[in-house]
Amino acid sequence: MSVTGDQFRDVMGRFATGVTVVTTANGASLHGFTASSFSSVSLDPPLVLVCLGKDAACHQPFVEGDCFAVNILAADQASLSVRFSTDVADRFEGLDFDTWETGAPVLRGVLAAMDCKLHAVHEGGDHSILIGRVERLGPVAGDSAPLLYYRGAYQALA
Ligand SMILES: Cc1cc2nc3c(=O)[nH]c(=O)nc-3n(C[C@H](O)[C@H](O)[C@H](O)COP(=O)(O)O)c2cc1C
Image (cartoon, rainbow, N blue to C red; front, top):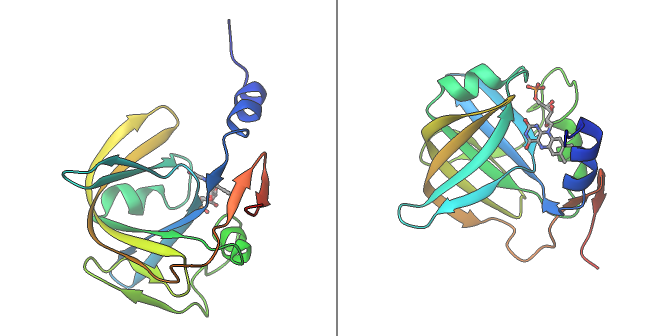
């Protein structure tokens, strides 16, 4: 049985996820994209993954870089998700962020974040699977509610 893109999207859209902004720094140039494909992989060592489309403008800096940070968005941060998934001249303009161990931007006010060294890049069809080794993590705005994504729309916990 063949699977169409529409069917695949429709079924995967019923898997509710959180929303992250994944960032990296290459010298002075900063890159970031909105991602819901984030998952933990291993506890020891602490590994996480995120899938990045090969046709993304930021694909090259991520796969050729050596780090990334995962910023987990709070319920009131849908505008950050939109900013990092649409055509904006400078996605970091006016944003406050810190750097932790690796130099990747950790956005202020996010629910939680983790700073990762790029551990491996695996082949994943039309995406690359970025595996990160977590070097530092922290709740940033720990007790806020999370931003959720379900069936193509932003949602909040009931
Ligand atoms: C809620 C949401 C989740 C997304 N998740 C992913 C993802 O996991 N991987 C991905 O490659 N793109 C994902 N995207 C799309 C990218 O954020 C978007 O294509 C972005 O513009 C890519 O960066 P670019 O401008 O460098 O091409 C998602 C978009 C939204 C709105």
